[in-house]
Image (cartoon, rainbow over all chains, first blue to last red; front, side, top):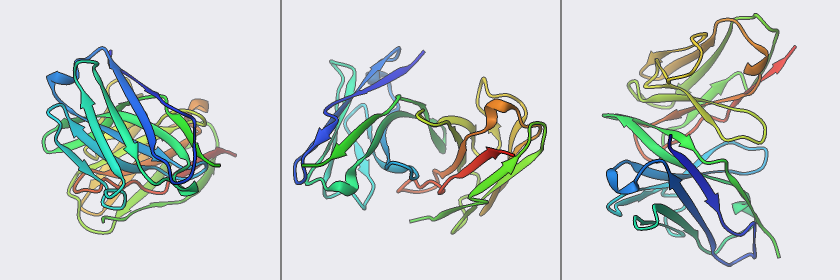
Length: 121
Length: 107
């Protein structure tokens, strides 16, 4: 059974960089699939941030592309998110998820439990 | 970006009711449409993928239909555990966009 677990600081100062890691268990990232990050501001809807393949190939939401970096560490079976120059608008619960598929369609399943990141001084 | 619009935004219903939630895409997305259920404080859970395929382990009272721009999620007989927020999501093109959500409440 594939499980994902987010970790990282719960509080980040404005203008600094948000850094989160998603540890994957029950499946080797090296075996395939894309892996993604999705966020949800308190009381609001879901926003896809970006996704990464085990090879390191990435694609990002254009609205965040200039500030986002997603990387993968297959030796630790985890992938990471960095979001730079954060503001209060980046306060959200951040989820990691596997992008499952039956070509050509795809969807996010399973998801991590999510981690709340608050941007505040 | 493809805009996904759900209706209604909120809905009150009773246990045993048949409920339908609609999702409309701003352009044709073929059948690249997924549905998720989210309960308070929890991560979204995949219910339906590719418009009408039921995810393993999801009760058969959930069903999805549609193609092109108009899609529906139907719950045939509401159970107490179904009261939650439901989101549609398109995977036709990037950025992968979600609907704004439909909150299903107990009447």
